[in-house]
Image 1: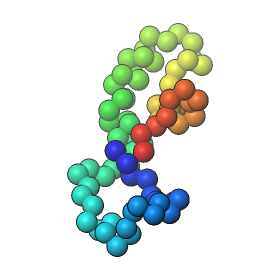
Image 2: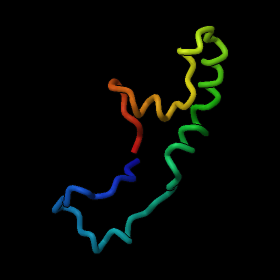
Image 3: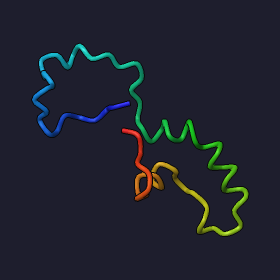
Image 4: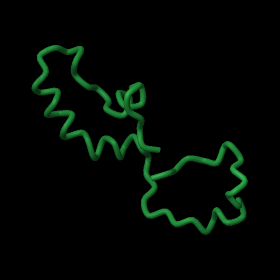
Length: 72
């Protein structure tokens, strides 16, 4: 869920204990988006007659969107 680095220096985080964190799955987020959403994107693109409405890269679309945010 949260692969972000501690860039703000949150005082509640003890850097000495970061090695104790458990990571169940840690993959490149772009590849995860492709694995999860590619089939739906392909179906969506098949229905579109206008090329400007087709989605080339769903992750880029979400990242550039002002309404939704990508998972980090």
